[in-house]
Amino acid sequence: MADHEAVAASWVDRWDRQQEHYIAEREERFQVIGDVVERVCAPVEAPVVVDLGCGPGSLSTRLHARVPHARIVGVDVHPFLLGLARHTRPEQAPIDYVLTDLGEPGWTERVGAGRGWDAAVSTTALHWLEPDRLRRVYDDLATALRPGGVLINGDHLYFEKPALQELAEFVRDRRAERAGVLANEDWATWWAQARSDAGLREMFTEEELTTKASGHGNDLSPRWHEEALRQAGFSDVGTVWQYGDDYVMVAVR
Image (cartoon, rainbow, N blue to C red; front, side):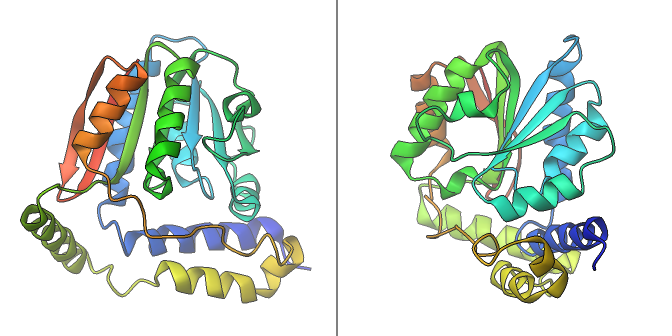
């Protein structure tokens, strides 16, 4: 029988390399998100950070290293990715993983973190949500976060002017070329290989090993996000880091 922790760790490492195929500066993005979380949580005795669309826990694990006194709750709709996250959670780390669908009625209660979250974070996840659903998520977060709490969203956002979007994509692709990550396996290959891996098939069902993702994203602009967040009740919204069409946007409750 396979060592489940070792199998999971190898697939999370492979996930991280697969994600770099699309985000050459992924670790830098993580560091920026961690900087904001560290600043917001520093004066709080027992902060709560919720990782939206956490996947296999890459960001949650890094945030634990940055803010070890925080309770972190990762949420995702995919039981397989959450299973990888649980198997690779650092020993005795205050990280919980919860199966729930962002935007569904009652999803914030299912997170089990109570009210008054200090931070909600996300990386390359919210772009999968339809605009109306994303508005509901922003409304819910405005209630779940404490005054002064923050939403930190790292994602590809889109320029409203096609010429600028084309240039931003070119900048992103050239950086990926220089970083040597274009040869990394892509998302579809990772999933196909995972479904056929004997070690994973000992740990997960066929249904769990089937991706739930669909579509190609919502293609929303920074201006759309800023307006939706302000309408939801966030006071200050802006970009704290950007490279091409890759953003880290922060909204203060």
